[in-house]
Amino acid sequence: MKKLLLLVLFALSLNADITLKFDADGQEALKFQYKDSSHIRLTMYDNGDKSDIYVIGKKTYIVSYDDGHLEIVDLDQMKMMMGAFGAMMGAQNTIAPYINVVERGGSTRVAGIKAEKWVIEMKDEDDIIQRADVLVTKDKKVTRAMKQMADTLTIIPNTEMLMSSLFEVEPGYYLISADNFKLTYISTSKIKNSVFMLPSKRSMHHKTKVRTKTITKYKTVKKCARWGMKSNDEDDMASGMKYSNEECLKWEYIQEPYEVKVRY
Image 1 (spheres, helix red, strand yellow):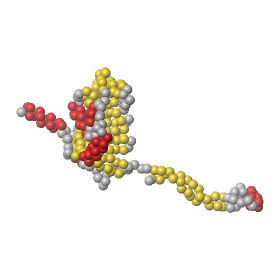
Image 2 (cartoon, rainbow, N blue to C red):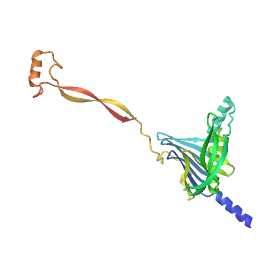
Image 3 (cartoon, one colour):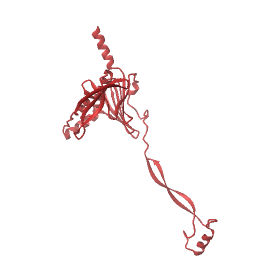
Image 4 (cartoon, one colour):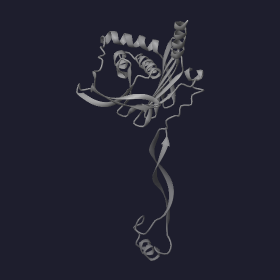
């Protein structure tokens, strides 16, 4: 009976709702929302743009927004296309990144959970080893969610090994802070089912990016034609000299340019 109870509790813990948020350079970069293996949403932000990965039942979709235009891609169809393309190009090998823990420091708290301060070595894109101060955690509810998030990201072709190694520094220890990327929010509150429904154009609330450009327009301006500007007649020039400070002897209408920003 005790073993059965533990199994039930473990199953329930896997299905518990959880939301994780990560910031990069002070702005929200990732939001992971998990209800169960059939209800997952991973939102990625980049300079005001966003895209989503939805797991709904056994189907996975990639949703993107381009200047407010909604695009939904069925991952099964995309993989078929990528598979055909990969067959023409040849198999691509994904190499796991080099990670080595060189120092283990004290502990701190991040978003309400315990985290450990480590120093690790990693290879950059030029295969040069760099050291970095990071925070890792073995908090069970977070590491389960982090593993699920890494598994969700591996749906992108040829990234399986990279993504699975990106978050798990050592078995059971997951990376939650490095450089300007860090975990900032954890919630186990119940997530509404509507969060895991694909958006439609009617219900889309994504803010459209406004594009503007500068164009030149012209306006009619009434100006005084001073002496010598429009006439070579000596009498007009003399009259203009006499009355230039008192009144305008001749008016003209010209098209004067000006710049304005418009949407397009």
